[in-house]
Amino acid sequence: MKIKCEKEVLLNGIQTVYATTTLKSTLPILSNILIETRTNSVKLTATDLDVGITNIIEVRVEEEGGVTVPAKRFFDIKTCFLNS
Image (cartoon, rainbow, N blue to C red; front, side):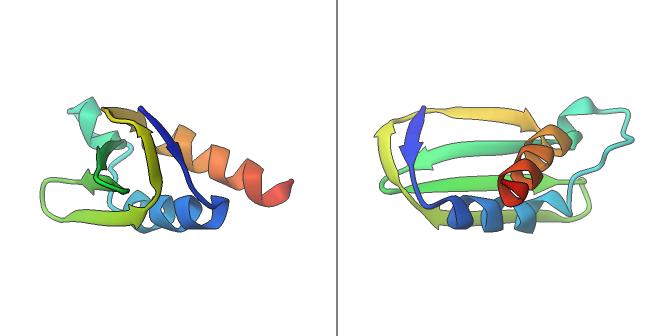
């Protein structure tokens, strides 16, 4: 998967779904964010099995794909971008 987008657009998308992730769960996948490419967009999804949030952001997709990433680590990277 390879995308290009404005940093602020991606950061806002991450922040929207991050609040739903569960850091202390018996199911580790619930602490992840699912990232999937669509035509000219990326779909970010997170759930705690009670509430789920999906955020679709406009990007330029260069290579399609999907992956889950640990929400806290991804969110921490976001924080590093804001401080630089």
